[in-house]
Image 1 (cartoon, rainbow, N blue to C red):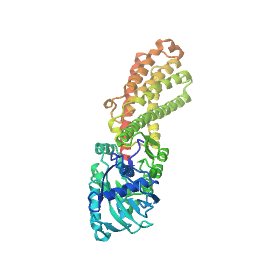
Image 2 (cartoon, one colour):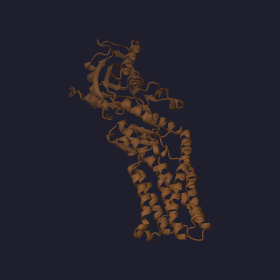
Image 3 (tube, rainbow, N blue to C red):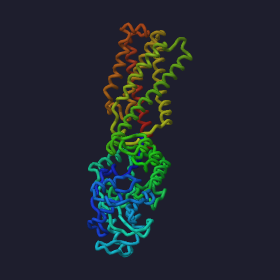
Image 4 (spheres, rainbow, N blue to C red):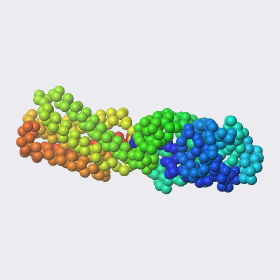
Length: 505
């Protein structure tokens, strides 16, 4: 989830309130029309194949239609984008997307009842539709005829709906962009409505593509896709993924299933269609981009803290393994007793486990985060060998300076092994200089609790169990020096590693 860098979403319910309101039924001149309202109500009331919010909004203003009897219907589909109902009287009422309905109309009913060829006012109708769409209204056209087919119908008027833009959506989209997530709108609405929504979001420099002029080569540069079919939504997502993006898709309808299935991160809404929820990776309780923004932040926080643990665990374990294997080649005794190895691992694990609750630098969540196995591999080698270099320095000091016996060698190497592993957590946990990044309280408690605790163990009954002896002053000074060396070396190496990684991104 935190890796997502492109989010594709429908307009309705995400960018808009999703509460469609039936504003008006008008004639072809844009004036209120009772006949257009009646025909729209009849079409919505008697159609059975495709329940939808538009019809529900129309039916909220009931009319008396008890005398009407349905004979047949031509159900809605995403290619025709219209729906027709035929009545026993022979009347056929068609309702749908404006351009698709106009394409099957040969005539227009004027406000005075006169029926004239549509060619006489085609340009005027197109201009009015464009003006209403640019104002943010969602339009359907209503037509009728005595035909058995959707052919040579009479355009009666238009149905106008309001779906207000959410008040805070522009700031939410801006926040997503700051976090490296590019929003792409995929809608079945016409280009003017889609452009209006994009402007409301503050997307002034956008590319816009419609389903009719669909071009794969322009998908990456386009932010708004209007008049697209479910199949085209799927193609858009697949093309974006093919270009190396991590693509999320938010949808809640049956027509979104194929797009949800194609996305890296598929997101549905609890109130959506069952098929969409079954396909989705994540089901939201509400259709709100603000919730997604918080989810992305939480995902990145979790991933970043997980990666801190991975960096620590792999490098520390590799360094310890390398040191232990190397020491065993030429030391005439065990470098560390098995019980001391177990205690060392336990003490090292405590600060690493506390990283799950660690604070995360604010700038670290501004970009998508990805699992990078080659980077982890390089990190393990470099920082593991740096860790091991401290072990070799300690071995040299114990053998050739302090002339330690096996018991003291094991105990003192245990102290060095645990202190370097614990203190270095404070350095590796951030890409910044460690004193400029505030760690979580449990991380601090675990680090200094472990460091302080191991030096108290020799004075307790557990000291003899783990074969530990009190530390002397010369080795205490050496231990401070070797930890300062390790912290400085890791700080330098860390800045090189993370700076190079950021440049590669």
